[in-house]
Structure formats: structure tokens, C-alpha cells
Image 1 (cartoon, helix red, strand yellow):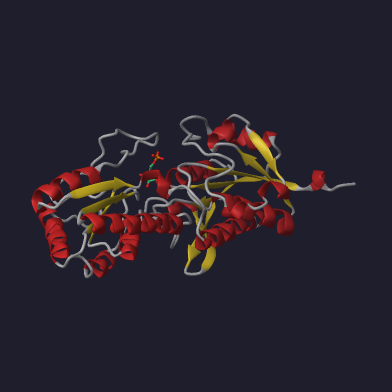
Image 2: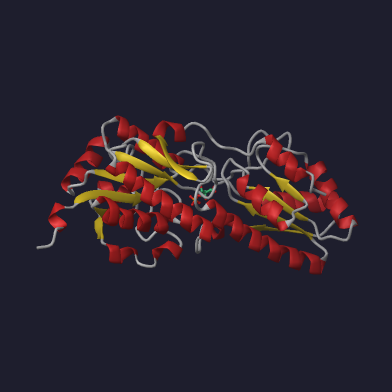
Length: 347
Ligand code: F6P
């Protein structure tokens, strides 16, 4: 007789913007769940939408075969908010109907905030932090960040060769929401002549000076701008596209403004490129695959230990468990010392 009926059941979902490594988390959770803890995993499709609409699939070991290298999330994702679009009771009922002991919620700030609220209302949930932006306070690095930086760096290497051929100034706009981590790391890796981040506003005249100085040395200047960078004197980041479903400004477009203004100030032919969602797509790096797998495994271990209301997190090289409240409220931005370190290389 097979023992499927006696297995404990755990739900898993991926929610919010996708990022490379989500499939590796699911695989880590499924494998550790089955091998170590005697859990059968069930996946909700499209994040909280699947929970509210009972859109659920069994996740046997076979379903995660070869998944750690695949980009995106095979469960799908959405920006459905379980509190705005549903209720703690609806979530509780869905878990009960599927015979689930609890839920692993993989997501960013919005998802973890919802998970915390649900946990306060008695729903058994463990969080796994995810975002390419690397801006969550309670973890040293988020998976997806390394992959985004790798993609952005490769794109900038390409911008440099075309920029050099045409003796142009190239501007690359990268993602990151209100943190400049992707710009800082990819800019440093690509040898940018200026890195513009929201944490450290600078004037356009200063940027133009860096551009002119690099050009004077025979270089094709590369300027990297985080999407939330606002030049000194501007009150807010450029966000002409309204708000997203969590009420946050949809950023983007600063690269084009910089192109126009730098061309005017420097007299150099300038071109801008918005890297956009290319940074979120594609295969995760080896680093992200390992981190994501470990986080998935740790999340199931936390559930098995009854550590509900927590989030798994990277501290140094260890995976630890912290309270969900630690993940929230504290936006991890680039410290001034890291900016100054990079600024030595500008111009
Ligand atoms: O938070 C991840 C992120 O990719 C940000 O860097 C970016 O501002 C935002 O999501 C874009 O969101 P959307 O997928 O809704 O366009």
C-alpha cells in the first residue's frame, strides 16, 4: 500500500514580480519536503490568486525535475493581494479544504507584508524573500539579484563596444525600485564612468563632468542610472506611469531624460537603453540556484519545526529563520560608504 494518504501536506506559492531562482526554491522545498520531512507539496497557481480561487496542483518529485536552472516560476505569479482581494478567512478555508498544514509564501515586500498580516490572524505561513532589487532588510542578499546583476553587466559590456565604435556616451537604465544595488554592482562590474543611484543624488552638471573627463581620455563614457535616481534638486524619482497594484509608483524613463540632458550639456552624441524586464528573465546564476535551493529547503524545515510566522534568510553564509516582522519596514538601501567606494572609479 502506498503511504501517500499519510503524508503531511504543505502549500507553496510564488507571488509578486518574478525573478530567476523561483523554480529552484520550489524544487528545494519539494525535495527536502519529501526526503527529509515527509511532506507532500501542493502548488498554488499565480500566487494568492490560486489560494483564493482553489487553483492548485500537486507537486510530486517528478514535477520539479531539472527546475533549478529554469527562469521564471512554473507555478506562475500575480500581484493579487490576499487581504485586498480576499480575506484571512478565505485563505484559511482554502488551506483547510486542501488538507494543508500551512503555506510557504515566496515573495517580496508586498507578499511578506501580507504573509505577516495573515500570520497575525492565525494562518500558518513561512516566508521566503525574493526580489532582484536586493532591498529587503532581514536578509544579506535576495536570490535573483545576482542573476539580474549578471544580465545587466553583460548588457553594459555590449553597450560599451557599440559606444566605443561610435565614440558616443551610453546611458543604461536599470531596475531596483528605491534601491541602487543593481546599478552599483553592475556599474562597478562593467567599469561605468558614473553610477547614479537614488540614495545619493548628484547634479546633472556633475554627471556631465564625469562624462567629459572619460571622453577626454579617449573613452566612450558609460553612465548607469538606477530607475529611481533623481538629479539633485528633484523632489521625487521620474514616474510618469502612475501606480502599481500595491500603490507604488511605476518607475522608469530617467534614462531617456539623461540622454537628452547629457547630450545638451556635453555636446557628445548620447544614446540610452532601458534594460527593463530583461533583468528579471532567463536562467539564474549558479549563486542564485544554490541560494534559492537552500532557502526552499530551509522553509520546509521551518514549517516542520512549527516555526510559523517566520521567514528564512541569509546571514553571512548561513540560512537562518527570522520573524516576518523583521523583513518589513526596513528597506535595505546602498550605504554611503559603498557609494563612495564606487565613486573613486567615476569620471
Ligand atoms: O521589484 C522588482 C521590480 O522588477 C522592480 O525593480 C521594478 O521597479 C518593478 O519590479 C517592475 O514591476 P512590473 O513587473 O510590475 O513592471
